[in-house]
Structures are given as structure tokens and as C-alpha cells.
Amino acid sequence: MGQQKSISLLVVLSSPSGGGKTTICKALVSRHPDFKKSLTASTRKPRTGEVNGVDYLFFSEPEFFKRVRNQEFLEYENIHGYYYGTPKAEVEKLLNEGFSVLFDIDVNGALSIKKIFPRAILIFIRPPSLEELKKRLLNRKTDDTEEISKRLKRLPEEFAKADQFDYDIINDSLEETIEKIYQIISKHQQQEIHATHQSTQK
Ligand code: ADP
Ligand code: 5GP
Image 1 (tube, rainbow, N blue to C red):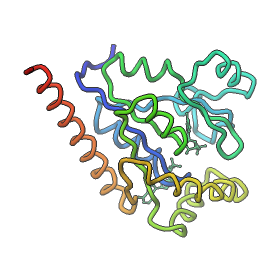
Image 2 (cartoon, rainbow, N blue to C red; image 1 turned 180 degrees about the vertical axis):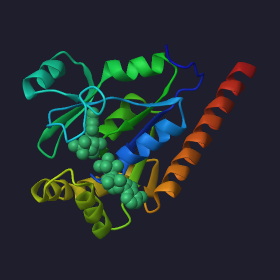
Image 3 (cartoon, rainbow, N blue to C red; image 1 turned 45 degrees about the horizontal axis):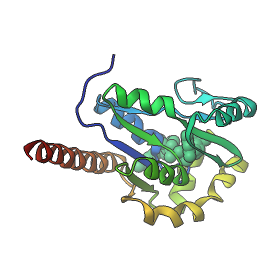
């Protein structure tokens, strides 16, 4: 059983690869037990240290498309040559348990989630510079140079969609970024509590 909470938020973090989503999500979840990251599915191979069912649900393409045909995904996208999708059941489970849900998904997935849940809060995370982004991707040591250049090719499409997001944050100092996102979340929680209070007063 999950912890009960009256106001569940849906917070979507998107950024170019290496922008800091995974790191920020982990920090938010560890500091705020009322938040859980929605587990998503991918057809890419697990990186060293990644665990099936923890980091992703890793599927082969046939397994993934069986689930597409069964309409099991809220949204799915082809990103850097692999498929990624948000299973409906994962999100429903977290919301039913009273958690607020964090999504670490790409810009197109984020806009699809906003259509399904108009109250979802979309946060675009921007690296301080292209040079710094390349440095972080290299330091992460999870992708070879070919994979990194594939990821960088997607930057123009990602930056072009940032203006459709509710917030646009530069991830320079990690601690400051986490604090800014926490402040955004707190503001929305207060607004929803206020709106619920107003509607029960009528
Ligand atoms: P994403 O999930 O968006 O691909 P990650 O969270 O894996 O990005 O971050 C990419 C790399 O950059 C990781 O090695 C992470 O530790 C590092 N990183 C993230 N944010 C910062 C920051 N503000 N300053 C320095 N390094 C960072
Ligand atoms: P990575 O391979 O680096 O883990 O992720 C590549 C990209 O896929 C990231 O931008 C990540 O946010 C995105 N992603 C992960 N899961 C999903 C998902 O379910 N849907 C969509 N649209 N994007 C996802």
C-alpha cells in the first residue's frame, strides 16, 4: 500500500539527453516520499548497472509492439533509434495509491501527456551550454561517441519545443535546479489545495 495523499501532481521533466533528468528525478524522489517516478518501457539495451523493472521495463521490439497493439501505452516515441513508452498501468497504479508522479520522458512524450492530463506540469531542463552538455555526456561514460552524436542531433527538435513547456530551467548548479523544481512543485501543490478548498466552500 502506498502513502495516502490528497493532491496528486503530474510533473514531466524533459531535456536533451544528458540534461540531468535522471539525476534530478532520483534526488526529488529521495527527498519527497510522496513522489514516485513512473517506470517506462524501452527497446534499448540496459546500460551497465541498469536493472529491468527498476530503471526501465526493457522489451524487445516485438514485445514492445505487442503492447502498442494492446493499447497499453499512454504515449510512445522512437528516440535515437529505439522505442520508449509510458505504460498506462504504471501511472494509474501510482495515482490510485495517492502519489504524485514524475515523468522523465522526451519532449514529444511530454506534450502527449499534457493532452491527456491538461493539469500536468511540463518542465524543460536546459544544459548551461552545448560544451557543458557534451562534457556531461562524456563524463557519464554510458554511451560511445557514435551514440552521443546521435543524441546531440536531436537537440534542435528538443529546443524548438521548449516554448510549449510551462517552465524552462537551466541546470547549472544541480542543487539550485533541484530547489527550483521543488519550489515549482510546492507552488502547484498550494494552488491545488487552495482550489480544492474553494470548491468545497461553495
Ligand atoms: P539525463 O537523464 O537527462 O540523460 P543524467 O541525469 O544522466 O541526464 O545527467 C547526465 C550527467 O550529467 C550525469 O553524469 C550527471 O551526474 C551529470 N549532471 C547532471 N546535472 C548536473 C549538474 N547540474 N552539474 C554537473 N553535472 C551534472
Ligand atoms: P535514455 O536512453 O537516455 O535512458 O533515454 C532517452 C530518452 O528517452 C530520454 O529523453 C528519456 O527522457 C526518454 N524516455 C524515457 N522513457 C520514455 C517514455 O516512456 N516516453 C517517451 N516519450 N520518452 C521516454
